[in-house]
Length: 197
Image 1 (cartoon, rainbow, N blue to C red):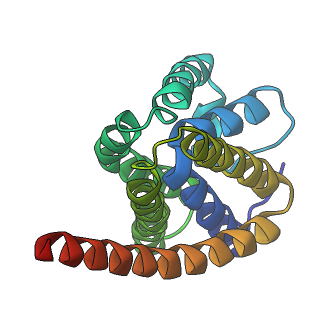
Image 2: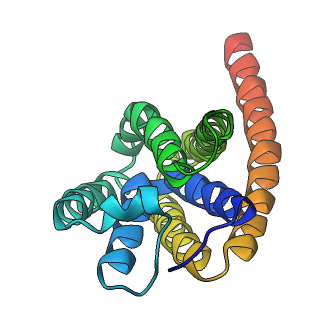
């Protein structure tokens, strides 16, 4: 039986929450397939992800997101709607992963997971707002494929090396916060210029 220490659970929550903020369906699908095939053991609260129903639903939704997220314009609507999916699901994953901790720690884990997902999701949406207006679709497709790859890769890595995955996620969080500030400033400058025309 695999024993998960609180620090390992924390690392899993950090990495999984960031990945879910980028692509929640890819994250759930990857964890589910790895658990179902017995390649990894997940914390007790996450065992349900290995259920075929969860795998089938997340796989179907991942396929839908894979297409929708690469169509300029539709990706902005899709991402805006997923604010109400990625963040709560990341919080739920954190809640389930920390089920054997004290209620206070479980609440802290849930809020932390949701906050990390919100940072990832917000930065993704902000970058898309800048890239989507470009006339060519290649940058949008490349960006979306990169986000999918990061979500899947980070999810796999957290099952093998939780603290390495968490460290990468923390680095991405710092970059995301800095990039979001840069994007917001760029949008404000653009908006100010448009108003003066």
